[in-house]
Length: 354
Image (spheres, rainbow, N blue to C red):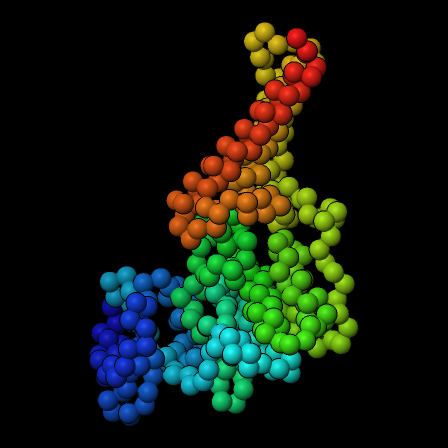
């Protein structure tokens, strides 16, 4: 424990409660009389706050001080006066010019985060975490869900907000710069929806930002920013017949070791299914049953790894609670197997009529 920091924090007196459930308070320094925000976090990455403390970023509240104690992080940060973007969207208080300005500024802010080594992924970009100042510029708040990018570290718990969180944040992939690009696309979508007129250009940007496959999104926020400034709409990215839509789990990230493990797994499943012996079954029926056994094994893999976003059909899979998501996946897999068993019975009945 850093006792000097703890002593420094004692100089901040609480003058108002902003959000009691989330432990956010308005405080005043007793010597300087300056106003700050105090947050007590139980979910956080201390190294992210250390980085922001040592490397202030324009468009992010400055970290004044912080101290970690008893699995909690107390943070004193700059107080930002303004209106939340969520309120502006709700009140339809946006013009297309405003939207382009806000997105341009947000891209600059996120680009600075992603330029850290390793990159800082915010993972909870949403309108309520964006304050529009009196100078009409956005400030990005709330870094409790942020993490440093690591390809080897997959997300195991959803830290973010449903509706803004990218598919990979639901426990079956690693958050990356494309995760924040997805959230920026949803924020842009919410802002554009508040306009009285439709913009094909903005729609095309949203479409590319929010692709299910991270590889189909913009490569980085600089590319997103360049396309926002371009007057021409992008071509539609999504094509239900494109090969990338059908990329098997294990091959989507193009990671060599994942592709190797996936290839071996698929091969073993195929060999097991094609060599299994079934009592009192021979000939064509035996091979059909082997094929269906292989399909059942694949259905479990597809359900677990959200192939083609299949988990969207099971609401339990969208829960923030990991154990609820696991139950949803188990039910989804059971339903897929049941459907395949019914189809197998139908095939067998057609080929071997009584």
